[in-house]
Structures are given as structure tokens and as C-alpha cells.
Length: 302
Image 1 (cartoon, rainbow, N blue to C red):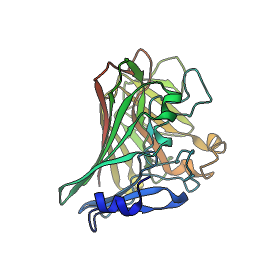
Image 2 (spheres, helix red, strand yellow):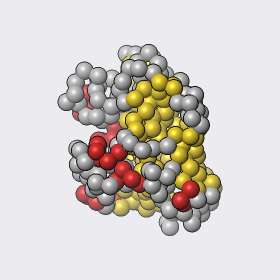
Image 3 (cartoon, rainbow, N blue to C red):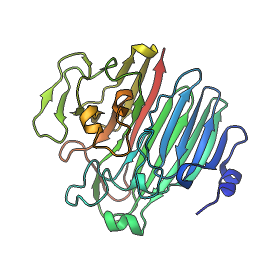
Image 4 (cartoon, rainbow, N blue to C red):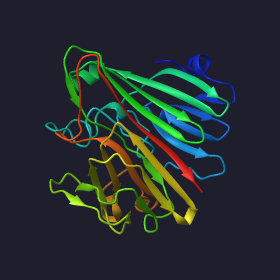
């Protein structure tokens, strides 16, 4: 594996981009721009922090998150690929796919302006991935850090067989309290509860929370706004390349069953994520040479 010294020599930018070894001995990159700073784990290509200047972190991390190879990191923006949720036929395979459980290679880091830096990481098929999913691919995740945060996950079919996959940018947002926030943008959208099969419709303009919530809104490309009045800010979540929006908060009882989350962890986060998750609705089919991009842009208004 490439060393910290090699990473900083090849890709570091003095006072702006720095690689280091952190919790669990995992490798991280820290990015500082004029308007924000961010931290990304090379293990899983997972963004862990995005702090606009003068604000609290937009991204939530569990205090009990495991930083251990072979285990998922709880919080941040995990990349779900090439399946979402449990594997369709083999429950022994990792939840949400293998992308968040492997080291990604640094492809490029570039300073677009003095206000914006882009980090590109890539993952290709390997012996371990082929054992779980027998296809050749090249996946590139691109993080652009500036006044806003843009995340793009592009998957290219580099093999000779057509394949189908699902993916998600499973974003944990840091909020003041699940009891007081509301999410706008999903009025009249239809959704499934969890992995249920009965479609429901959200009629209110704003979604509020008073229990476990696990909704998968289908056939929607709308942006969402998280209203956090206690912090006097709105978090705007835009997306592209996705027809499903997942909104999740485990509530008190389910949180007790999650080993890498503190008992009250559910109180201070909500997940709002672009996804492609349902056979026959929006799973992605790529013929050889084709590619697809799933993206989100996250920004705040005070």
C-alpha cells in the first residue's frame, strides 16, 4: 500500500491538502479551502466531515464508530455499491455492498480555484470484489469542497458483460434534534416503508419525526431542505442520477440494537440520501463501455 509520505509527495498541497494516519491506523485526507474544510477516509472513500466556515459540521459521526478494516464506518457519507441494503440472495454478503469496506486509490487532487478543491478516488474490481460480484468495473468518487459540497459516484462497465447494480450516497446529517427538525421537498411523493411493498403517499409539505422513520421515496428527483430552526440553518440536498430518496432515522428502540451507535445517537442525525435501489424502478443497467453518475450537492443557508 502507498505510504503517507508518498501520498503527500504525490498529491498533497501545503496548508490545503494533507494525508495522515488516524483512528485504527486508517488513512485519511484533510482538505482546507477558503470557505470550508473536510476530512475523507481512503478506506471506503468515505467523507467524514464537512465544515463550512463559521458553522458546525454538517456531517454526523457516531461516537462509537468502528475504524477497523473489514467493518463499516458509522456516519459520514458511506458509499453503497454495488447493492443497497442486504444482498438479494446471500445475506452473508456485506450490507450495502463492498465499496465501503475497501481502500480506494487516490486518482487526482486538484485546486480548481483558491476556494475549491476536488479529490478523486477510484476503485476497480479485485480478487475480493469478484468473489462477491463477478463483474469488471471502474468506480470513481469525486468530492468537491468549497462553499458547498458536491459528491459524484461514477461507475463504468469495463468488462464484456452487461451488469445491473444499485447505489446510494448514504449521508448522515448533523442536526440539533430529531424532535425539532423538518424535511421539505417530498410532498405528494410516494414511498415504501423500509423494504415493504405497499406504496404510500406523503401529503404534508414537511416531514416531521416522532418515531423510527425509514422511507424510500420513489420516482422523485426533487431537492430536499432540512429545516433546523434550533441552529438557524437550512441544509439543502440536491441530487442527480437518482429517482429514489431515502430518509432514515432509527429512533430510540432500533438504536439500542446498533452496536456502533451511542444510545442517544438517533437524536442528532437524519439520513437523506440519493439512491438507485429498486429492481424495475431505478436500478442501473450498464452495457460494456457504459457509465452512470449518481451525485449530490449539499449546501446551507443561515
